[in-house]
Amino acid sequence: MQKFKVLFGECLCTQISWNMQGPFDFFGMCQCSLCRKLTGSAFAANLFVKLEQFNWLSGEDNRLEFRMPKPSNFITSSCKICGSRVPKTFGNSTKKVLVPFGSTMEIPEIQPTFV
Image (cartoon, rainbow, N blue to C red; front, top):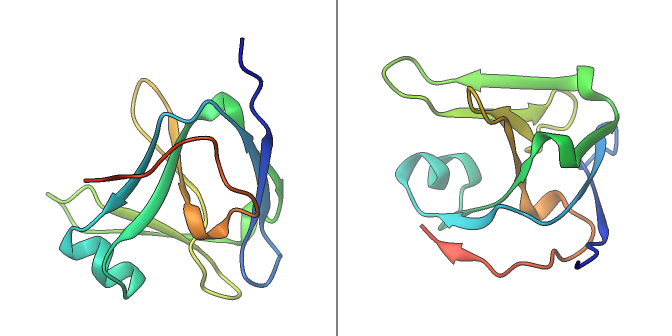
């Protein structure tokens, strides 16, 4: 059985921090118009991990979520203090966590895919 390293992440001001351990479900680079607007770049790079493989270390109460009006299901999460993107939980039955790749301190053991 492969042992995955623990990855740490934090927002720009370091008030929100977390860790997670693979295996990761997906490492995607989304090029949709909403992700481009959100990041101000050509794509958003996101890691996806199961909820039980993710832990908040500090500052979870400093998160702010923005939900697009229905029928969209687009949700983003950011730090209330510095505004940088932070992880968010999603899914109904199988909870997953979307983690902005740029917020991680180490490189995951998974290759990116464009979606």
